[in-house]
Length: 95
Image (tube, rainbow, N blue to C red; front, side, top):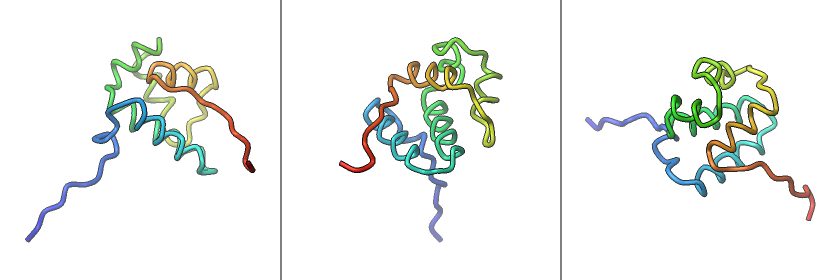
């Protein structure tokens, strides 16, 4: 009988281009928890402790900010994205 390993997106988030594409796809979902989950996946891929340090946050604060249903401050999200090596950008809905 075959055995399967559960899929974990963090296993594939190993460079800035992949991370940016993953986060961009998550931003397209109207549910904000999808984006927070994606940021949490990236944080796990990079190491939560290291990300917290790079973003100037406490590790507990990072976990709290990325909990489903959390409402992290905009500046916290920007600090996290900067520490991950990506940035938010806007584009027109209709080109």
